Length: 138
Image 1 (cartoon, rainbow, N blue to C red):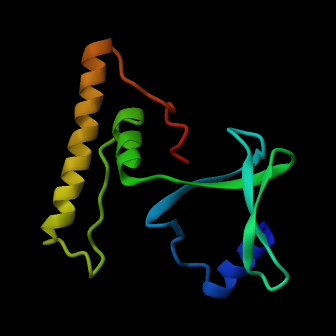
Image 2 (cartoon, helix red, strand yellow; image 1 turned 180 degrees about the vertical axis):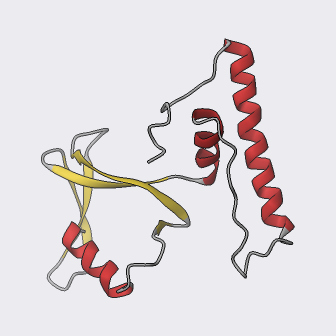
C-alpha cells in the first residue's frame, strides 16, 4: 500500500481525523522512512488488475515507510526503565470503569514485572538499563 492509498483510506474511514489508529490493538509508536534493505528485505503485496492479492514482491532498493507499534509490556518498560517514570493508566472510558478489576490486575502485573526487571538489572550491574535513553518519549 502506498502512502497516498493509506491516507485516502484513513480519510474515508475517519474524515474528522479524530480516531485512534492502532496496529491490531497496539498503539502506533512512530512512523519513519527506512531504506528497503534495512534489517532485511522489505516485502510488498502484488495485486492483479481487479486489486485481488496474487502474491508478493521482495525489495532491497528504494525506501519505505515503517509504522512501528509498541505493546503494553514495552510501553511499561520504556516508562519505568528508560525514563524512570511510573505509568499513568486511564480507566475513564465508560466501558472501562474504575471497578474493572480485570484490567487493573493486568496492569499491576505488567508494571510490577517491569519494576522487578529494572531492579534486578540495577542490582546485578550497578546501573540502570536504558535501551533508548528516553529517545522514544516523543
